[in-house]
Image (cartoon, rainbow, N blue to C red; front, side):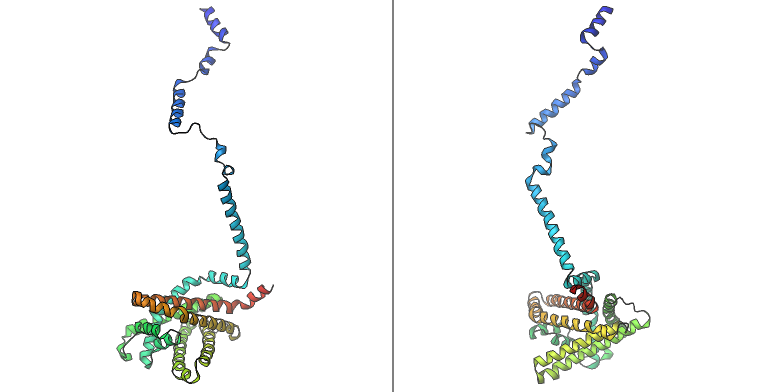
Length: 332
């Protein structure tokens, strides 16, 4: 027995324990074979090496990545050049103010609050201020008729309004004036506190009603006698004065008249641009939408026009506030 054990060790040249470790496991081999067979059944003869999945082995992926990188670099380069220009700086300032959302808020407040306020004043003084506003805004006769029909009201006396209705109407108009006051305060970095804040808004509402009365007077008395071109010049000068005074009034005289003149001029120019938009596009849109969708279609076109007016007020305020600094940087 000793001789056999020694022969078994000497013949194999290694210990018996190591011989047992070197023997393959039947269960593992069966599992590998099963995986290999399933791979063959699926149509894959052999697994792909990891090097085949690298991006460098796919030219199309490389081209897409390079094109995307080049597009980003070109876009960043052009954006940097645009931001350095005068319009780019104005756009950056407007974006920081959130002018689109604010203009949407302004359009809704105008329809919900300011128009009822004008109807209230119209019933008190016996003048149709909404009609004057629509007529002097540049709408075509058909579009003006469609718009004014939305705000038609009876010639009832002021006593027909309830006390609650009067309070709500005035409070709503004050809300719209508050929106403009907040705009100017953010642009000129001014904080208005105390009783002056509400008093100046009430003052502005009275002035806005007076501005519309002047529009009514110009349309009825001045334009028939002097013609369209002189009337347009008078209205432009009146717009400069109104928006110049509006900024000074809503800022509670915390900014000087000289500095605010550029704001009045820029806003009047943008306001005139809105008038061109009304003549060219908004009138057609109101008539078309009203015939297709009824009164709601006309209201949609009116809201779009009021959004354009809100954007014009924003642009005028930003340019008027920062034009010196923007021009100085542009000249450099």
